[in-house]
Image (cartoon, one colour):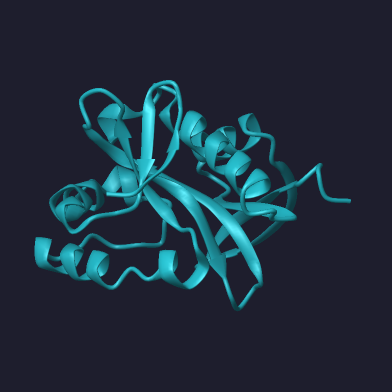
Length: 170
């Protein structure tokens, strides 16, 4: 397993096929996927197929990463950067098991990802998207330095786009 980032409490590493059960369980919770536009995997095999076909690391050199406890290796969820070729932009995203919400894990991991994107990948701008009613995710985006840019249509729902620019690149 390739470790990408380390924070005080967390390791962010590339996904592994052994994450399939955790991935499956994470998306089973309707509260976790409520604002994502995604649906739950129908079976663990579907989660396994998703992980087997996840090609962002090879294609872009980065992607979403598993977020695990540094000491116990407990899988909390995922966080990371995703490049969208159609929009020519990179976004920050995160998703955690509900019983780990309100512990600062999303903020801690997302901040590390923003820093990585700017310092290691030399990205100029990173965006964050959320449904307007998803106040918890919007709060995380604001805590890590993103600022409201505009509204947009998020799969028929009212969405918001937040951005942050790399201060090292003029």
